[in-house]
Image: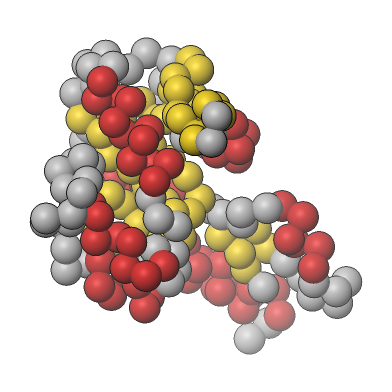
Length: 187
């Protein structure tokens, strides 16, 4: 079984010893998109995303945010990194409603970024929550580009029709893995 950008590493151990689990990442898809972006920084909405992805961007400036409780509500705050005049891409493994990503983007804009985009591997978006980022949605215009991969095709088939979403195909991640496995078993 090949899993891309697993949310919780211990999930790998749900499988029996007879199942080989291969962990991969879709970050190379984002790196291809970043090639033409000047003054680019990668932002992480929380410590978990930072721990998961920071080593994959060794030559890109990092911005780390964190969720802080204030009574009954959570607020995203800047923990470290320079935002002013940077083209920021917020990176995380998955998105549900997009609330944390939206808070992080609002913070980046308030701190003076040149633009803000985001990337998630898994676009869960229950109950059409993705619509908040599209025309007439409450967060319309918040993201320059909202990059997602096609790991959940029932959602991404809709997203590819609506800006600011850009669906990145995972075939360039999985095809080499399949070829490698074919070589190993001798087909």
